[in-house]
Amino acid sequence: MQPDPSKLIHKIGVETPLIGFYDAPDVSPFEPLVRVGAGESSCIFSFYANWMNGETLHLTNDSFGCRGAGSCLFGVVTRSPEAMVTFLVDEEGLKSSRDHMRRWIERRGSYRPENANLLIGPLRPHQYGHLKTVTFFVNPDQLAALILGANYHSGLDDPMPVMAPFGSGCSQLLPLFSDLTASQAIVGATDIAMRQWLPPDTLAFTVTKSMFERLCQLDERSFLYKPFLQRLRKARQTERGVL
View (cartoon, one colour):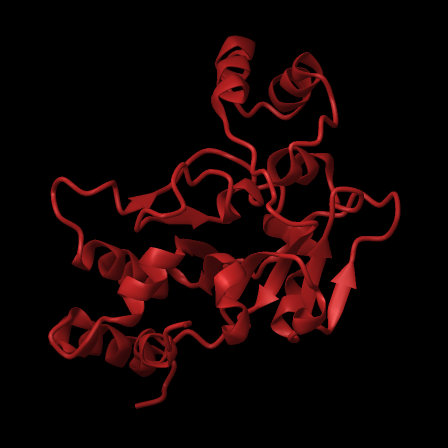
């Protein structure tokens, strides 16, 4: 059963809808849907406005948008490894050497869908069983609060609670988690190729289901109800002339 994030998002001031990444057999519970046109190479983040308007992006093995999304979300071979190295290093300059990029490509993971449909859009509580990750689109203050929240229950011997890995924006939504059962988060939307589709002060904070549940459990003993966060929010309100 999906936990209720309403207290969390109210306390940190998130106003944009939380976005779920689903792997599901039936798309009807996610309507209204939007799809990538046949043969189009659209960035999945070009559908950000659709997500904000309550629509869900439907991806399949035959309709996945850009070649990077096809590779990391479906394992579709969209270009040879050497062609990918050439594109990412020689054309876009994302690593200092072809060898570094080649080794990263060899080690990176690709998601293997369990069903025919991958869906990205507003949370659907009754589809919680098919949910893989949850993404908060946030400003720096909200990101800071979520990073604190992700560390709140974390012990020294637990997996690293927050990561900021190199990779495409779509890979940061799911494939870069090595273990979806672990309580972990990724600071995402750091791929400059996709940032044109987001507001300039917006980053992504993507969490596994286990981490989502932890965040929703933050109570009155946590920083959400303590002076540090209260003073920060008051300062921002003062800057905007609210107080």
